[in-house]
Amino acid sequence: MKKPSALNLTVYIIVRIVVLSNGVLALVDGRIFTALQCLLSLVLFMLPTLLERRFKIELPSTLELIVILFIFASTFLGEVGGYYDRYRLWDTLLHVTSGFLTTAIGFSMIDILNRSEHVKFTLSAGFVALFAFCFSMTIGVVWEFYEFAMDMIFVTDMQKDTIVHEFSSVLLDLPAARVESAVLNGVELDGWLDIGLIDTMKDLLVCAVGAVMFSVFGYIYVKTREQKWITRLMPRKK
Image (cartoon, rainbow, N blue to C red; front, side):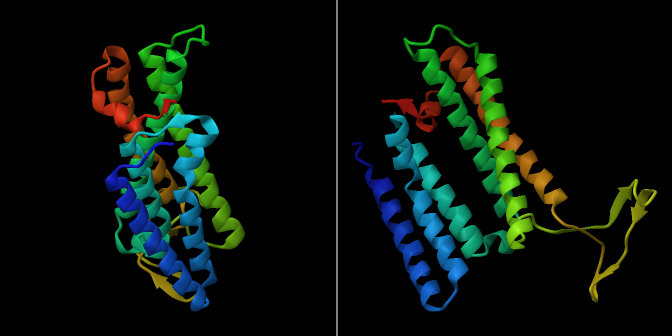
């Protein structure tokens, strides 16, 4: 069994203590949904270990640390700590990071096949980069499906609302409409309320930015075997 580095072990202990203590306090205070979110974070912290055992791969320490911090930043700080509302760029930065990381996973899947003696074909660097990008974007789309389902079924607001001041509509026969104010259930707004479309498209766009970034680096790595730092972000076969 792989022994975690001192840094990784320290981070594991700290994040688990923080999440567990907040979960217990939420449960005592009767905040069941918050307690469940903390429980979800604790379960997701086990994901790297489960993946290693299930697929018989080894996650580099750097990748493992980034994954744990990403889970902590998204499921705990973002949802429980309210960072998505307090810091406008928090969600954007996380989606860029997710695009970067999932592209690394896509690259490693093909790279493992390319190195395998049981596989009778070798894929070009360009195809590997394209596959990794598409893999990352597919994960991003599935996540947006999840956010939409949560909003529809449990009436959450994972697809954040946005106030816009101009829009076009075929349904209303408006090629372009400027909205100075609107009233929704007695609440006066200083524009038109978009209920998730802009947020969803922005998330997918920044996810694509992260995916393109790693795709370029990954292409260079597969083509030349340079950019050795990339191996710190790519799972490998045990």
